[in-house]
Amino acid sequence: MDQMPTCPKCQGDYVYHDSVNFVCPDCAYEWSGEEISEENQQKVWKDSNGNLLQDGDDVILIKDLKVKGSSIVLKKGTKAKNIRLVDSDHDVDCKIEGQPFSLKSVFLKKA
Image 1 (tube, one colour):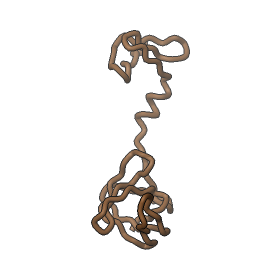
Image 2 (tube, rainbow, N blue to C red; image 1 turned 60 degrees about the vertical axis):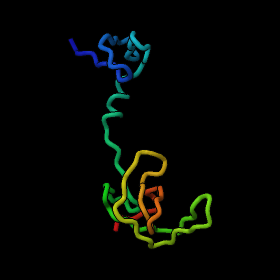
Image 3 (cartoon, one colour; image 1 turned 135 degrees about the vertical axis):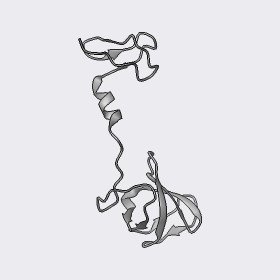
Image 4 (cartoon, one colour; image 1 turned 90 degrees about the vertical axis):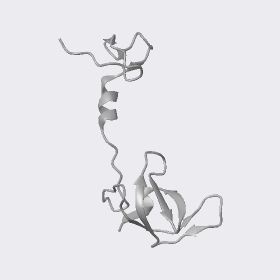
């Protein structure tokens, strides 16, 4: 007999399968088995050219970017050193000229 998974929400052991989803009777959480495999996949960040990005890489802006809420414009060709990758709508945290910025990787190329 196959081993039932533990609940991803409460880590409960009394999980059962109701022919469509797994169900946890402790917290009433339901999920399909496919969701577990999607969570195990690691996020991959790529620049505008398709190169893989990693924490600590240096990148260059490929177009002028207006900073929302200010009159600052980040110019094309500006280099950001030692980036940090994050899992949000803006994937890259970096410092440019001493100021912190959150940027999208589609506007960057690996230096």
